[in-house]
Length: 216
Image (cartoon, rainbow, N blue to C red; front, side, top):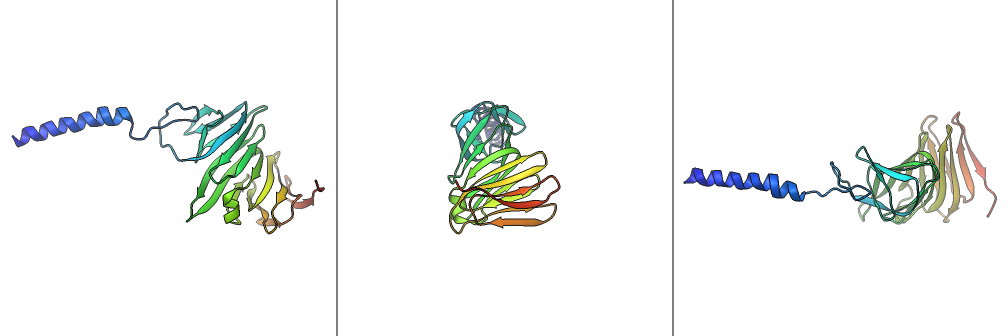
């Protein structure tokens, strides 16, 4: 009798695993287009507010076309092509506008009472960044990695451009008491500014300069 019960229990468990559990999907996965795909689905960190084709996201080694309202997750790489542009709104209110021929990867975005950090990587192209809640809470909380180093900002509006071996950090606006810095990993130099309307440039030879911009 015990052997029969154990056998019946094994059949029920096997049916549940192969049918109900796998069929329903314990972890429903969806790409940017809403289509399911295999692999772990990290939490959503941003949404697409505006889009101008061509633009897409690389996720888990697969490409998905973007549309307004699509969720952008940790470890996603958002890319734009010829004439493409994307506006991303992150969970803390930070907004990022990507220019054509750009690539932005989401590394870490955490906005909780215990931790506040925003980390992305701009491989190429341009990104206009308007810092949100993380920049208000943490002076070095907004971090943008570039091929040459790292840009950090608090409560500011800045444009970061990468291309042709050169990089530009253009500060469009900044709240009093805030700061923007650019670190060069090759020379270990760090330039810091607390002034709006200035630019930190790094040329192909890794020479860094601060340039004053004309007032608006």
